[in-house]
Image (cartoon, rainbow, N blue to C red; front, side, top):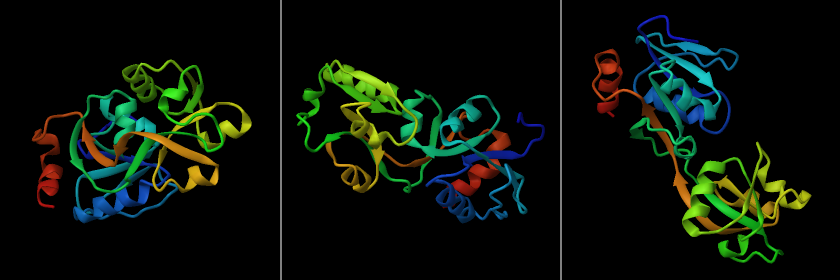
Length: 208
């Protein structure tokens, strides 16, 4: 999907909780486009801007590879990817936290009880850094999706996952041990602010 034109390309989540708020944000900039969930690329009708829909975790890679100029992604993804992309703007939606949690009835009462235990997560890099700072030796179990069910099926003793209200954790009999970080949706870019190719779009950002 390498760019073949000089249009500004913005990558957004193809499905999930950030998709609609991301598109709403782009509309606040005055961009006009049709949202067809079957299309991979949407052309704006009033500006040289196109929107591409990709998997959330792939957005930083698309920008780093110059496939897209900008992306809207959760800050937690940027941290997990250890990406050095520039945060152009914090967007104030998609608020959530990455937390450590364990079954309410387990012997794990605080993070130091995780010593020699198994922790299931999608965010292995972030968790590894946290455990190293806290000098906790634990096994990391890498999973994709449905992390909260891992303790109940004996795949792990605890989990490290994203939560918004904590409701899903409570529904699965889990209690939060500690918050690792807070996250929100951010607009990111590889290039420095003011590059001529993206100046038109950046002028829109300045005005909101």
